[in-house]
Structures are given as structure tokens and as C-alpha cells.
Amino acid sequence: MTFTHLEPPKTVRCTKTLVEEFAGMEPAPYDRPFQRRRAAAIKRAIIKETFRVASFASCYCKETRRTYRVNGKHTALVLKDLNGRFPTGLPAVVERYAADTLADVAECYASFDPRASCRSGSDINLAFAASRPELATLPRPMISAAVRGLAFATWEYDLSRREPDERATLLLEHAGFACWLAALLCAEQQSRHLLRAAPVAAMFRTYARGSKPATEFWTLVAAESHPKNTHPTRVLARWLLTHEVSMSEQRAGQARVDSLRGMYVRCLVAWNAWRAGKRTVELTYHPADKTPPVH
Image 1 (cartoon, rainbow, N blue to C red):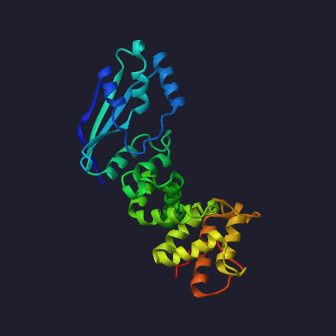
Image 2: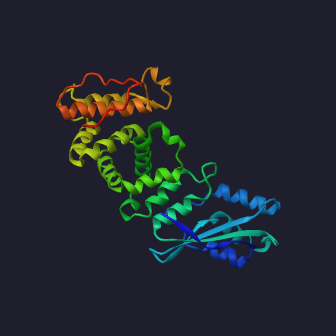
């Protein structure tokens, strides 16, 4: 995926015409909602003459033949509403890009306001999801859960070194899984304990082995519907319902606390037992052991 400059970035004087252009420009799909607190902070800075520079960016998408605003929404809307108090001499940096697809527009959007700013990972996930029709209508919690699970299944604890846009790209690579996850868990009202990174990561690994057996297994886990108490799906369901997750392996030694990787591995242990037709009384996990293969 790529996006390129339509022209070199320009520093110009901020005018009402420029502000109105970006205030009225179509936002990038799934742009974050307008935040009154952030707008108020910008307005105070402008009135106090401590606002340094306005920053605007747009991206023309060849796929849709439309131009989207990818940066500068709050600044443009605040300046547009200042009327008689519009600042004179305020500099503005204007960047104009072009991209082939909506997915490329999402990548361009994600490049602004990096991790340390108020544009969250969830905002970036939604921007990527909006580039694919089958993902655009999925509920926000499902999109976030899918990205977290895919990232952990791919990198495990190394995911902390990955940028939000790199994680969100996995959503496009595995769109079929995200849709399957949403269909499975939206049908199960009592499935919030499954919308965590560890179970979703295990769901992805099992889905890769076959969507039909994965659907059967995880439906049984979500509903706790198998009649035998020692059935792997019942044992796993009890574990997930009675344990919280910690990123720390040390804290996982406390009662009712499991590590992220520990919960992930236990899900795979239960799956492998189910595939082998075995009963499961205990879901064993040793931090030093390698992640088990998925049968």
C-alpha cells in the first residue's frame, strides 16, 4: 500500500477560504468523532495567540475518485466558527496526497497524530476497516478485538514493538476471519469474556485450520452447552469466565489471574484435546514452553 505527495508541502498564510475548504471536506472513512474538549483547547490557544501553526492534509483516492481530509478537522472547524476573531498572520502547513485505494487512504490517515497523540489505535483500526465493504459495517468492539487477537497470534509479546498501522494492516489481510468472528460472537450475547486478545488469537489459529470445526468448537465454548462437565469446551469456558488477564507472567501466579500468553496457550490446549477426542480436566501451561502447534 502506498500514498504519495500530489505536490510538495506548502507553508502559506491561513485564510478563510483555506479553512472553509478543509472544514467542508469529506473526512477519511471512520475519522474519529468531533471532540469538544480538544476543540475548546485549540480555541483557547488561538485566542491567547499561543497557537503555533495550522496543519491540514488531504488525500485523493483513485479508487473512489474522491478527496478526503486526513488531518486538520478540529483546527478547521474551530477557525471556521471564529468569525470576527479569525487570526491574522497565522501560518498553515498544507499537505496534499494521492492514494490508489481506500486502504492506502487509511494508511495516510494513520501516519498523522502518531501513538503519543490523541488519535488512538482504535481510530486507526476503524480507518483501515472502512476501506473494505465487508469490514466497514462491523461493530467497533469486534474490529478492535480482531486486531488485538490477530496481532498477538502473529507476534505474541513482540506486538508491543509494532506500530498501530502495522497491526491494523492484519485486519485487511485476514478480513474473512474478522467477519467470521463478528458473526460468531454477535450471535452469542454472553461472550464478552471471549472478546479478549488471548481467546481471539486462539480463534484465529483454529480458524486457520478450518472455519467449520472452529465454529463448532467456539460455539460450544461460548454457550457452555456440551452436557459433559469434563468436555474441553466446558473446561475452557470455566477458565475464561473465572480468570482475568495480565500482561505480566509474574502476576499470573495470583489467584484467578492468567497471563496473556498463558490464556492463549490454554485455549490451544483445549482445542487440541477436542480435536483428539480427549477429555480435559486441567489446562496445563508452562511459560518456558513453546507455543503448541494447532492440530
